[in-house]
Amino acid sequence: MTAEDVVNLEACMDCKACGEACAWYLVTGDEKLHPTHKTGFIRQIYRRYMTIEGQIGGALGLVPTPTVADLQEQMPYFWACTACGRCTLSCPAGISTRRIVRLARAAYADSGLSYANPTIRSIIENTERHRHSFGLTPAQVIGRVGLFLRSEGIEVPINVYGAEILFVCPAAGNARIPDYGIKLIKILNAAGVSYTISPYVIDTGTEIDHIAVHHQLSRQMLEDWEQEAERLGVDKILLVECGCDTRTLYAEATETLGRPFRFPIISVDALMLDLIKQGRLPVEKTNLSVTLHDPCYATRLSGLGDLSRELLSLVTNNFVEMTPNREYNYCCNGGAGGMRLPENTPIRRQISVLKANQIRATGAEFVTSPCVVCTLSLEDTCQTYGLSKSGDRMALVLFEVVYEAMAAALAKRGALDQMLVPAELRNRDHDFFMAHSLEGWLAALMESAEFPALLDWLEKDDIVKRFSKDHPEVYDHLRSWRDMARPITPPDQAIPAPSVKQTVNSRAGGRSQ
Image (tube, rainbow, N blue to C red; front, top):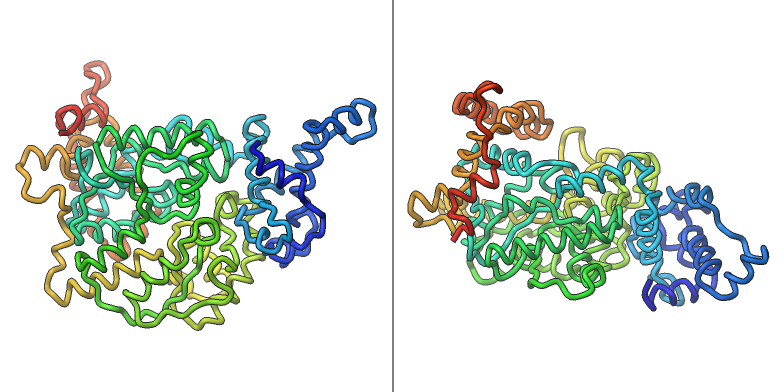
């Protein structure tokens, strides 16, 4: 607990004005979803155990003592909330309810009580075992993205020492929308950005930080990120489309680590804006009718609302503002566990009528957001409330809107092939290319014992099926991969195969210099 936490716990006047800003309470009228229901319970624990009056009164039986059963009963309400911070805007004392919610989630994690929730438990265990909150392996993450990129002839730099920027994708991005996410790779390639991806750090830790609020694992994830950036000799780290990661790296990381994060951070939206202004990323304004959803964690909690609007002003002629907007915008109800916990689905969809009405009132064809989870939640809302036809996407990640403008400009110039090869792989010799390219990484993977299982997984994967609707040749690529895969030696004759990490390192010469 910090001094700010004590102020938040002591200053509440119980006026309940915060409820007027909370979408979950406004739509349902459920008092247990009111912000003060959650904060009041934490205050009760705080006053009983952390004040002199409570300690004496509790010992005398004059002050109620919450039990473990009480903790278990109240636990769901701390995740029936996105900790979006909108309630603070209507609080006359400026109390941060979201900090109290985070405090409670951390206490549930430290006590082990949150493990009773299967989703939270899986996030913690997957992060411990795989350093990926959805439990994907590096082979699955890069293999699937690699399949999509190779289907379009796109290359990506891997494990390149001395690149300017380290690109790490949040788990929600590479687990839920990798087929859409390759558009960002094309943008970076076309603009000639010096970047590299890591075959080892495949998650940013956003779910462990904001859903589980497991401070020990959050710290380890941040330290892993720093160590990989140091190993690769990059100058800065790219903050990809994730509102929660924005808040983590701009604010929470300092508390979690007990010091500032060791590398400069650049938001991908700020990067794209700079590239357009510098003339490095050509764009042709589109006529897409687009409205913008402000992510709570990127706009209200990190102040990036104007950045998104400036970027949109350069790539579309038809931007329509929704009301309310910026820091007063309603939450998408998806972040920080709102969408990830399946038990929230019915109430989340009920509450999202506010967001559906906001979008409908704009008359826009598309809604965009600089956050992957917001976009996923918005698409679910558009489908639930009939704003878009079944199977049609209405919600786009902001970089997808930029991509449309870039693709139009490149097509006009006859320069679409500018997207194919990244700056770090241009004009390199064959050995360097094979050591640091997607092609080389996949070749190494094909020689490993894990490759047949990866092929089986890809052939059954729903996102591969989704990608195949516009790219039917993707299954031809899978078949060719299976044909090229080296037959695995029978178990009684097997020689231990090197891991993908060992193989790539050996090809890359250790530190990949």
